[in-house]
Image 1 (cartoon, rainbow, N blue to C red):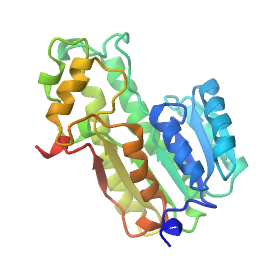
Image 2: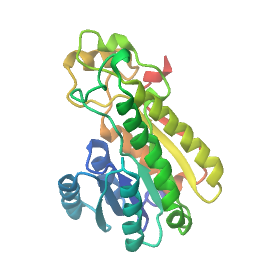
Image 3: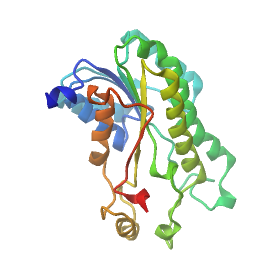
Image 4: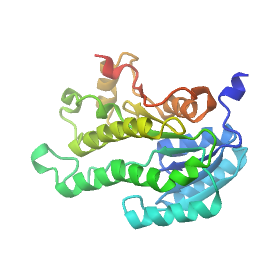
Length: 265
């Protein structure tokens, strides 16, 4: 019974940003749970690598679709191709995100130097793309019996940054990332009440995930967090699978915060 509750067998699920750290982890768990997957990313080589690994571990089929979600025409073309491959979608995970790099001009800098260009790019990928893709994929979602939309928010979409963690380090927390994730969480709430009762829409908001940050930052973050450490991809995937599965059939409009208690104080 428990296995059936969390099973994704025969469910057709699209995952954006599937070549990245969290996206590939989500794809792996969803494949092991039996889903037929449509993996979306702009990194063609990365997608092929993920698909190759799933061919050994997954139960269902895997299709890869290359698209630049920052571009509206690319999003439209993507959904056109997706529509030629399936007549329905049981779930979509809006995981792709604009996170920038320290080398990107106008991004990992102080407020005075953050650029409008990077602000617009972050909102385009993190908010506009999930809105547009959900809109375009609506006929595929409506064709399914119990579809679920899951967005990946962030703890920084609900609380401000603790700048003590960044002191003396070449790290940043751009306003555009925080604002875009907050907007995505609210968009998800809006979609939940708008598309109910036929389509469920929920967010999962991770806390900081450990990914080769300076050791001083990792230590500070752990000391700042009730669970005493940063998170990992495996801490997040269970919440997403829950929201995609039938075990969450009465859950919509929620933002599940998986942050080790970081936002609790």
